[in-house]
Image 1: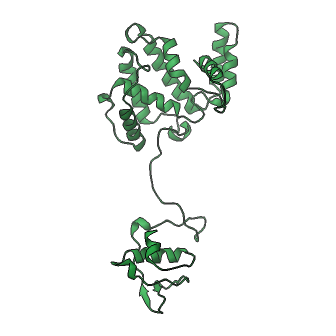
Image 2: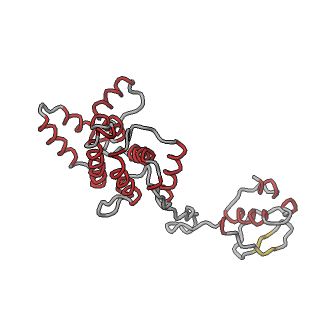
Image 3: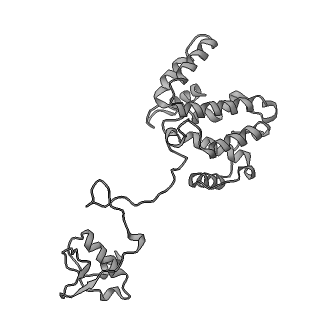
Length: 264
């Protein structure tokens, strides 16, 4: 808007006109910039309204756009060359070809596996919200974070945040009914066998994360006398982050609670 108010033009802006406007903005006094003619030129000269010509200046790098390879005449997207974030991404997009977990997630599991069993209220107690956002942002940016210096409760909260933001959830929302049907089997052994069959339907990256998570939760539950977190408490704190049905928010709260209880 600052550029447009400085240059007196009522014509439709094309790519060439926009480059000329950027040039005008770089002048010491943009208010004295002559009006532009609507026609584009290919001779590298800026044609002014009074008929004179002026050599174009090189556009600063910050304004440079990369041309689309599919259409040389259309502008492509900015080449940001940014790393993909960890949170909110499909697991298949951030896990390795052999289903290895991203290194920051591996480190989270490792630290919690080591310190979680001796930490009272692990996965239940909250952490500082500002610290959670900062750690999440650093991990998303690929910053090398010293997790050893972080609170165990903070690491647990961030791991739950990671699980909660997996698209379609870790246990896959489209398998929700099959998980629920497995729980309806009459005996414990039949339930276990049915749950194993449903688990085998998960995408391989999801199954890899699930194995790490269950190994961690099992180790913590074995030290419930110390950390006060048996399997039931862990399920209540972690379960809802792992699975939810593909439904909208119009479901009554009573029904949502019943669904969460089944997931736990």
